[in-house]
Amino acid sequence: MRFWFCSALLLGLTACRPAVLPEPPKPISGARFQTADTQALQRDPFANPGLLWVDRGEALFTARPSESGQACVACHEDKLQGAAASLPRFDTDTGGLVNVEMAINNCRQARQGLPALPWESEDLLSLTAYVAAQSAGLPFSVDLSGPARAHWRAGQRYFHTRVGQLNLSCANCHEQFVGRQLRGDTLSQGQSVGYPAYRFEWQSLGSLHRRLQFCNSGVRAEPRSGGHPIYLDLELYLAWRAGSLPLEAPAVRR
Amino acid sequence: MTTATRRQLLQGLAGTALMLTVRPARAQVVALPTPVAERYGQRPIAFDRVRVQIPPLAENGNSVPVRVDVDSPMSDADYIGRIDVYAPANPVPHLIGFELTPAAGRARLETRIRLADSQQLWVVAEAHDGQLLGAVADVVVTLAACLDSFV
Amino acid sequence: MTTNRRTRIAAPDQATVGEVIAIRTLISHPMESGFRRDATGRAIARDILVRFECRFEDQLIFAADLAPGTAANPYLSFHYRAERSGTLHFLWRDQAGVETRDRHALLVL
Image (cartoon, rainbow over all chains, first blue to last red):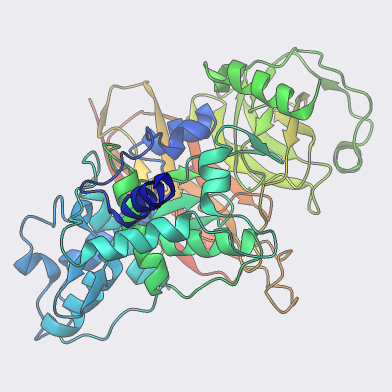
């Protein structure tokens, strides 16, 4: 009798899905894991190298792309303040997640008659940096209801899945060993609030997906292409995981 | 002291006014490194008027902030005309050179350099009359955790 | 020929006679050292800025000779003793001779 009772209980427990999402771990920005000089450089409203891309992004945002075309700012008079904080989101038209880069390209194609910009191109980085900077200081506020929930779950699952020849999951470094040394680096929580970010390693501004590719190759897993569905799922999960951390793009990281 | 503890100690110290670290006027100068000797030969270098500020532990060797301050009135009669920065362990040791004029008003400048390895940085300033003034700074450059598999 | 390099200049708009002001400059440039290799192992060709000049009108104030050891997106901070109103001219020249220019008007009271 006890056997059947325990089995039923176990079955019941495993079959249950939590009605609310688990609490994200107390979020700490990656800025706190950089040296004081690097943190000061990020805060410097002049010398932060990422601002060179924001400058270019602003120019692209306000310039008319062609004689007949409209500038982004013609529709987006508010300069998309706060928009980046709500991305990625589920798009019913495409049936998948859309992040800042994809929203920019969708708009270019649908409303400006322009071709999509390639991933990690200077122009797309610049526009993404500009749009992300318009949400600086705000926390992520992504919508996880409805179809987005399955993507959040896929991102959460990936975050905890060991991959690559080194057989490490994101959680192994960025939850289990936060604050510990990995050669010369102190492991951060892997928060995404600073992206697109200027990384000294790249000597350039780069996107979150480029950082995820770098993480994959770091554990000797096959990197995916920018915009890959699993990276989008992960991006959504990371946005939730950031909790109330303010967005700080363009961040400066090593 | 293990690397981890040393880094933590340095980061703790670095947490406050990192860029104001002042190098002692006569920090352990052993011998002129080759690029400096080749440029200046036997000319004497005084080590009491140049101050170099640089983090003792570089966040990343690709971009290390450095500030140079030379004690000089920068008048028409007495000014610093040239400041050069050398990293002897780099493939191209001469990192950057500056030309100053009295109109600069102050012999203080700041830039960001690349360091290929841990080493002793050399800064040599030349006054209007050819007098050489120098300073050195030791910088540790560590390897990143994960190396990029592609550019 | 000018480029589409982004430049940033930070300097006061106004100064008093004899005041020493700080000037900060930033320019977007990869400063490709020539020592990096691509995914196939081929060396990536050197492509760097080699010269920076700041003039007040025609008078040279400050200049820098840049090298592969200068970090990407070069940042330069220096000083200038303001004497009279005029324009500060900034010039960056790369190894091929291509120039990027910027300017800043200074009012001296």
